[in-house]
Length: 137
Ligand SMILES: CC(C)(COP(=O)(O)OP(=O)(O)OC[C@H]1O[C@@H](n2cnc3c(N)ncnc32)[C@H](O)[C@@H]1OP(=O)(O)O)[C@@H](O)C(=O)NCCC(=O)NCCS
Image (cartoon, rainbow, N blue to C red; front, side, top):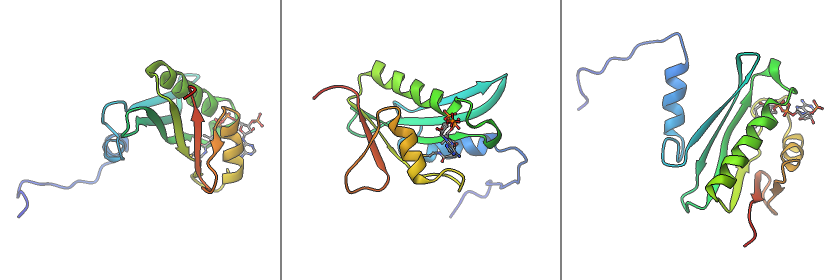
């Protein structure tokens, strides 16, 4: 039986919804989770979420999104570079991600090529998974 005091309401703003959803993602909200926000001329234009993998030695870039009208101005690249800088500072051995485009504007092929500029390499046999080694084994 549920608690009879539960109330469900419709809300106008997504702020609380997204913060709860982010906490619900695998690893989201746990130790090592980070949320980056890109601002351009005082506007919030892009976000990137990352978290520490279960092994504790790697970082996974989980969500990257730049608002469509603010794309191709460097915000996406700046978010990825900041996440890599944090990963190096924390001493992670590598960074992983799934190159899975949200929406139709950017194809998976283009997205993978885009991630390659930061040093990510596609894993053989996997259409989406990419990895960047940060330190020699
Ligand atoms: C992928 C994404 C984050 C890139 O963000 P961004 O702020 O546009 O990236 P940058 O400005 O740093 O990089 C731009 C470069 O990427 C490439 N690029 C990005 N979008 C492109 C497009 N539609 N067509 C061709 N090249 C494109 C180009 O090389 C471009 O450089 P140029 O404009 O000088 O030609 C953004 O397109 C996005 O939010 N897409 C939807 C969400 C998504 O799919 N996220 C990835 C989940 S894994």
